[in-house]
Image 1 (cartoon, rainbow, N blue to C red):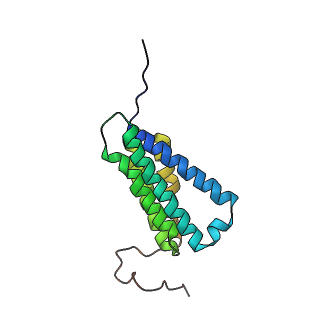
Image 2: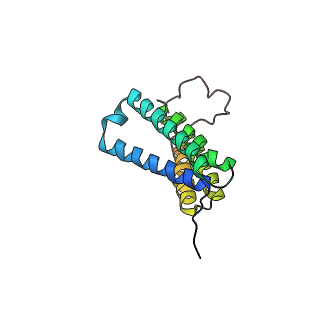
Image 3: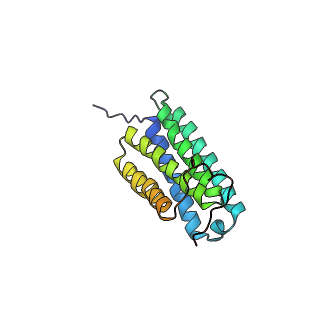
Length: 154
């Protein structure tokens, strides 16, 4: 009896994206100047997004199962994360991290990655909602919240 390992492309996509994001975080922690400059932050976001897209495409070619649309969820989530990180506005960052946490939560639920689900719902989405409430971010659908600077409390 021979055991044959066959993987699904969405599992491999999740593993590769998680590895890329972990390396990115270690790079930010080791090289402090990456987080100080807006240009460096935007460049790093573009490179990370390109690597994640390449990992998702490569996982589809390596996998033996047919293509599943759920394998594209990490790409969309990382796209939102990169948009938020590349923004200079904190409100936009929080909204993008909330979207990242929710989308990756759906991906984790679909692939039965319960640790990833817990991390995304509590760490990313939960912390974003807490910060939105704490700092009184205007909701995106509020009538006069777009295009006007936030007013400081007197």
